[in-house]
Structure formats: C-alpha cells, structure tokens
Length: 63
Image 1 (cartoon, one colour):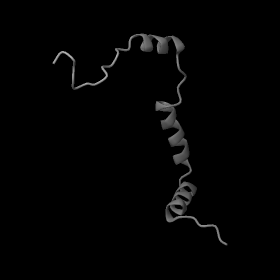
Image 2 (cartoon, helix red, strand yellow; image 1 turned 30 degrees about the vertical axis):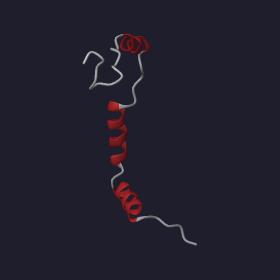
Image 3 (cartoon, rainbow, N blue to C red; image 1 turned 45 degrees about the vertical axis):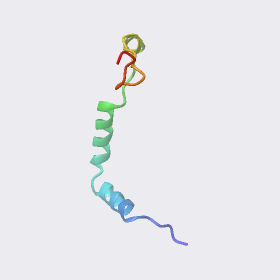
Image 4 (cartoon, rainbow, N blue to C red; image 1 turned 90 degrees about the vertical axis):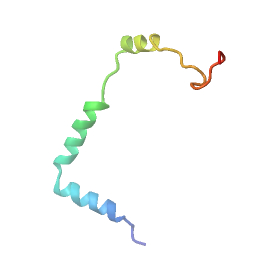
C-alpha cells in the first residue's frame, strides 16, 4: 500500500524545497513573539497587581 500525502502536504514540501529561507524567517518571527525568557520578579508583580474579576459581569447584587 502506498503512503498517501495530501495535495497540501505536497505543495508545502515543494515550496520549502524551492524556498529554504522561509524556515529561517519563520524561526526569527517566532522568536520575536514567543521564544522569550520569563522574569520571575516581573511575573510576581503582574500577579500581585491583578484585579479580581466579578463572578458575573452583567449582574450585580446591588441592582
């Protein structure tokens, strides 16, 4: 039995073979937004400054 590959998979394989620079651009763009080290002190400050959310936004017991 032959291994099935969808048209999308074939397209992506061919595209990346013709444009190998795309992978490096993807990695660079990902690093811009996602691959960050977290500062523990800053995370604690964010958690400490959080405002508690009301259980239900559109109704209050005062009404």
